[in-house]
Length: 451
Image (cartoon, rainbow, N blue to C red; front, side):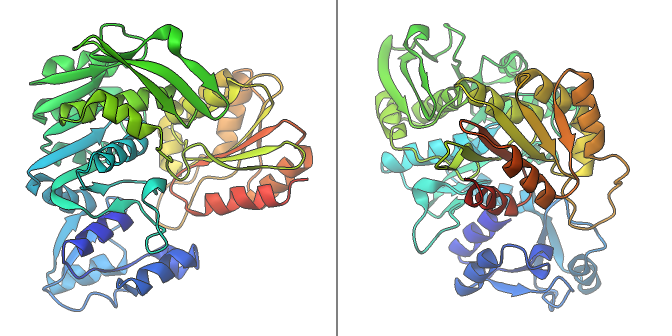
């Protein structure tokens, strides 16, 4: 909601809002910044809804019992979902780039934004994470960038089906795997999305995404492991380090090669870079120029975000991993270099845990070794009517049944104490989870207490 509010205000609308996190005293610095920058904030008690001329924008996660929703209904206010407003603004743009897929959307959106900015295109950008390249003292919460209204770059979400609302000039399809919906539902949503795009940019490394390429009207393909993709890499050129990766990018359409130096590790980020380069190429930016821009890509907050390394050589990493594919990518990146991994995981809700809990357990058991440890606290819960009968203890049992090592410690503070007590030289501690801005503070608090 924050980047959407920033974009709406940048386009000249008056924007006000409420958030139960503000009422609970969570991340006060974020809300103070909003008020300082002209956003009117109200308690979540309905007091901000005073006129039938107002339009209520509420995400799909907001229950009808929330006071603002009830008050807006009483006054007859128009109501739009977050995705409905975003898609209206997006579809108005003369040239639009949508980034879809189960994993990697925010990173690829940030990469495309930086390439387009580097090329002098000045895009408006809607992202789900803070883009470090665009942070300034005036905008420390740079999950949006206000640029030309006629060049719009946005990640688009399949979890609530709203990806069907977008009509992109270029539609990127990164991957298709289990998250909020079944694979069968995702095939329909992403297939329709590819067909709705004037040009689809498709990842051939993802079998499910590749199978949907036949739905595209026009396409550009990419892949790390598929030599026939339009944009790929020379396999023998890939060099992985602890905090970066290098490769030779191949443009098979022109039989040219260009060096890529990416200041972040992991083959999944190499794939993300190819997606961004392929998209930029489809938008008229040369592959060489796109690869050069990514040398200075600073990354996103909470995407393998290294908090620091202690005097005893213990590294703390803050990461957004929350579904099986995202968690697997992060854990594989960590296991590509020596050292024990202590993986703290806070599930991002009871509903998602029921949907993908077994797959998450398999991921942690498969990706981590005998010396590694997973520690899970209870899922995120900020209020509401969700069924809380199945929690993290079930996932820990499933990890153990699959041969992994895991512990369930209900509270975060007790998890932190356990992590600090067992951490040793050379360990990598990764804090993983979504839908909770305080996880970064939690990661920093662990780092501050390490020897």
